[in-house]
Image 1: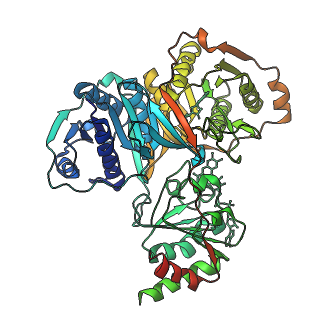
Image 2: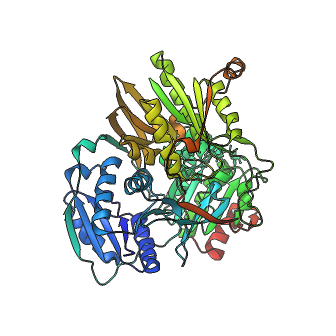
Image 3: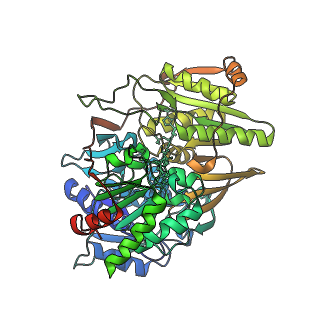
Length: 323
Length: 249
Ligand SMILES: Cc1cc2nc3c(=O)[nH]c(=O)nc-3n(C[C@H](O)[C@H](O)[C@H](O)COP(=O)(O)OP(=O)(O)OC[C@H]3O[C@@H](n4cnc5c(N)ncnc54)[C@H](O)[C@@H]3O)c2cc1C
Ligand SMILES: Nc1ncnc2c1ncn2[C@@H]1O[C@H](COP(=O)(O)O)[C@@H](O)[C@H]1O
């Protein structure tokens, strides 16, 4: 009783930091519920991945294997995971709120007839959970009623699980999939090519807004700064909508939530929807020519300046610092 | 083709949200209420599909109070054909909303439900996916492009690290992302016409569903406010501060 199952998402043959954050939150949940934390990975030929997953301190890792889970579609994942949950008796099913988890976890909840909390940021001792609402303007304490519940966690709110010296036992199971219930077909994945760190993993994030004015300026003005800092690149919705940069760089209420050690906002006004995705960063820098811009109200260091002058200057200053 | 579009009434995204001192909810005076932005995108997409196909029926559905009529009328003015208001005085959680929508789907038999990916008040991002599973339908969440031909639907969706393409046969549930389209405004003739379009009201307790909320909000509070720091007068000063003071570079 009281066991937790964490859905361990893997990409390109490894577990990203977001997955390790989910495992750590799962371990905390299990401690507070008085149960064990298990992790499950889905896919095919999982041996190598499972050996890796076993290092993070869970009581067990489970591999659900099936060729139809290589490009996991939500209906297949929901079937496979819900069947497993029923079989082994789980109280809380968890995952970090990535795009993939946002897609599948509510579907798993529906299949289990379980209530769900999205993007929690804390687990209270009494079992209640804390989650932001209204673009982070409200923190709600909530309770989920029932024997089984589904929870996603915000990747910025928990640390990544540490490697444990005792590897977890590994169990491989055949995924239970009813072909008549598999109605979704994977066609293609068009990966955004980038050599930069992932937004949700980076120690430093530099984001650009509408103030950059064009995709070309992102390349010639912002990217040298991004690369000088070894940072990940992010953007405001306005910059993404205008087609300056790919969609998955959007930081904010309806994009990605990040909390790096350093967040540099360039030519971003600081609308509440943007702040919702970055205001928990450790140090925030804002570069904006409008001294009234709301971004300055959350910035530790503000620079009122024309970004087209300030950003290349900053890149140069940073180079000097290295020598 | 018949398309169902759920509509939620939410505070205008530009509204400043304040928590009541006793933590029981948010202050609702001075709030301008609008259609959830993602639902506007859903409605726009439904209208475009209808326009492309030259025929169809776009049906709006809200689960809320009498006042939600206002947003349904706006949706009708944008071009929807009719609307259903399921009147619920008690709060409903995402599961209850999905259950009610599933019941409306059973009655109305649409081939497609286009629904917002996220309500910008509760920020749950759940209803579409729960609905799809309750119906046993395929889903495409976070859609940025939808193509329909001969009952086959291909959707490009916003995933982590790129764009994913999925395909399936209708009926299906699709949830909208920001880049799907740019919603139109209601025109003056649209607003005039909307007054005469059918808006059916259904009392929620006539549906015979178990809607007992299982997600309970115990309390609300405002998050700790971040303190503004200081403005620096030059790039050199900024880099120095980051290096020696914040020690992040
Ligand atoms: C449903 C919904 C969801 C949303 N979700 C998100 C989200 O997830 N993320 C998000 O970011 N937004 C989101 N938004 C949009 C948000 O409300 C703002 O519109 C958006 O963040 C503005 O982007 P921006 O700051 O780049 O543009 P603007 O607000 O136009 O600001 C541009 C800034 O650049 C400055 N600038 C211009 N030129 C220069 C220059 N030469 N040098 C220096 N500074 C300059 C200007 O002073 C200005 O402050 C959402 C909105 C809605 C309705
Ligand atoms: N009370 C409601 N009435 C109609 N539609 C709703 C209601 N609540 C949520 N929805 C729909 O579900 C979508 C996702 O909401 P949520 O899962 O709560 O973030 C919204 O964009 C709406 O389209």
